[in-house]
Image (cartoon, rainbow, N blue to C red):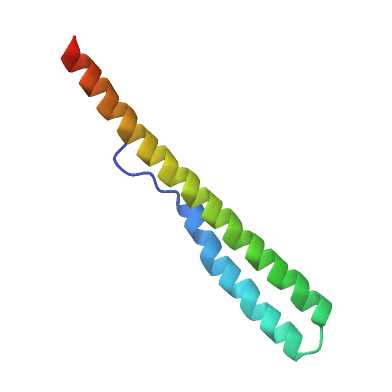
Length: 77
């Protein structure tokens, strides 16, 4: 596995953008409570995306470190 990427995590970014756009439309129409919930959901999607990519990068980095450690250990034996 040379690359750790998950397409469903990246899909959250356009979904958050759509929700943010809908929030602007709802606020323009005077539905402030609906606009607030849409902004809340879009921020939650962005936070989940950030956490997901942080986890994927951590997994990638830890796998690389573990492989290096195993190679160094095998050279010692």
